[in-house]
Length: 218
Ligand SMILES: Cc1cc2nc3c(=O)[nH]c(=O)nc-3n(C[C@H](O)[C@H](O)[C@H](O)COP(=O)(O)O)c2cc1C
Image (cartoon, rainbow, N blue to C red; front, top):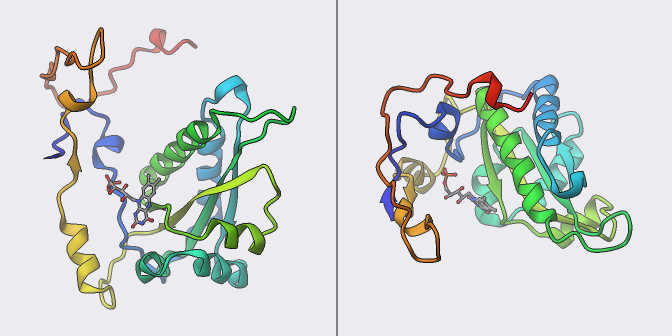
């Protein structure tokens, strides 16, 4: 693993995104922003345009449901995620409307989630995905039907301004470097194991929108 030092050509949203746990419990997230996150998710590509993503939103408008969602989290996640004013449960539709399994459902839900996350970062919010929750408990608590699988809980909130009350070990984790496998370990070309040959990034000018309109297919 190595410390992730993004190229200056990487889009700032991608370069700067981190899954911060430091949420401001006092500052609710405006409902129009939550709606925009869902719109971002909805716009994702999907296999056969099946759109196998579903979202369940929990926030201050229904404190009882928010509390039930918090109780689905593992104790380790509750330690910081209980400060998040919004939780969103991301659910995959793993059975297609025609009754056959959709083997790409989890993939497509992931695409939609990343859209949601990047939109949230663009709005100044923090998001941290959590696999650490009891999916069966969530299924029963929120009447999620068969064929739909609760996959990830997203904790969302404004960045904490006041760090009081946040456990020391969590603050320490937040300081840790962003680690990634080297590009050479994940990118091959031609055949498995043959390293991608252009490992050095060029050019290295600061980010400007590099995508010409004519290349966007619109
Ligand atoms: C599918 C998935 C499950 C995750 N589950 C948890 C979790 O239960 N608790 C937690 O604190 N972080 C969780 N994370 C956050 C990852 O630990 C985090 O994304 C990873 O360490 C990389 O850090 P970064 O997102 O800040 O770059 C999860 C992330 C993903 C994508």
